[in-house]
Amino acid sequence: MATRDVVFPAGRHALYERHRYSPAVRSNGLLFVSGQVGSREDGSPEPELEAQVRLAFENLNAILKEAGCTFDDVVDVTVFMVNPDAIFERAWNLVVSEYWGEAPYPTVTAVGVTWLSGFQFEIKVIAKLPE
Image (cartoon, rainbow, N blue to C red):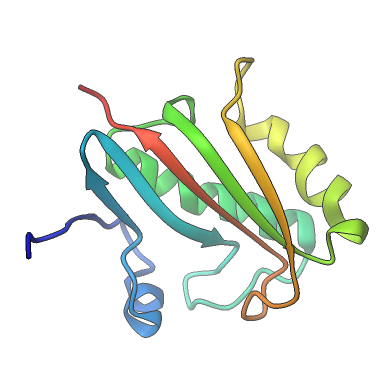
């Protein structure tokens, strides 16, 4: 089996080791980023929803930066939300414009879930690596 080309951002390694996953893997010109949550340095959730979503984007951006990418390189997004009927406007529409540029936007799939290990929001992406 080939060795995975894993991308680790600065910090947060304990969270990845505790849950046994890689933050991102490079493969065939693409960067596959694991779901990012609004976790603090110690791995605990940021309690306030909008701050948790912003921190999830900051954690995502740290991985993208480590791989030489920006959010402009993202082609596909999947978001997971606990109780999306109650939080979608605050979790998505109010915060996303702070991190996304102008159109054209990446594809997006939003999924309502019942559990995110204490978090309310998670975002995973696929980005095109710079050539």
